[in-house]
Length: 245
Ligand code: ATP
Ligand code: MG
Image (cartoon, rainbow, N blue to C red; front, top):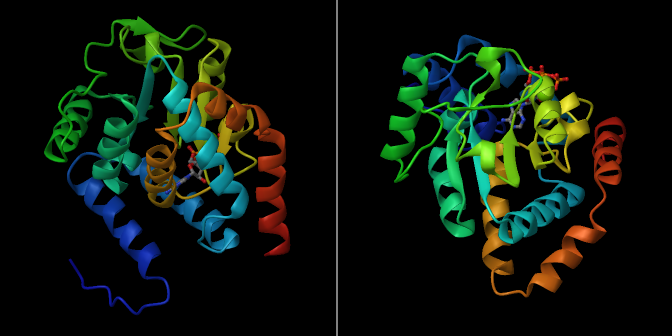
């Protein structure tokens, strides 16, 4: 690895890019994942590479939803697995969620490489490999999920999900927590909770909120969820991008 000097003004961004490159080399991330990363970087740049106040509120609402859930599942794709595997395992532990590998370009090889990668980062069980459930309304390959994973989940965290699949999951009545840097993407638009933030900042912050909220009553958690407004969160993100503040 070429050493990135820590005092480089865009250190975090370069580190993130390097992790995606490594993911491709290891067979975890698809080459199309590089393009998704580029789109994400552009939006992150416009947002000031920070967690905005409204994104923080969305992350808190997401934590409350995960704690209230009967069966929460964190959906993992190739970009996310390369960027923050350990952080996702930690979040799953804190809120009692399952981890499920869920790929747009599904190949058995990549499914297994990602599951192994997550286990190396501390995951005990990784779902997604049995693929015995279907998301209605999608073509065969793209519809595959585990019947006892995403198929059975009431709350799903879907980072960087394709718009079409995000819509299909929402149509199944699931509470969808979407992490996506583009507030105009269809995935963000269909989310119950759109989190307009970089996944590398979002996941640890959801975990931090979950730790803090763990001791609260159901009523208190429900109150946090009730005041959250998806539309306002999307508007605040778009405003931050347009005005640069
Ligand atoms: P649509 O949702 O409108 O159908 P899409 O999902 O097909 O668009 P892609 O380029 O496949 O578009 O998706 C990549 C999405 O992931 C982009 O919206 C991009 O901003 C977002 N993204 C990429 N990297 C990150 C990241 N590190 N954290 C959060 N979001 C990211
Ligand atoms: Mg999208």
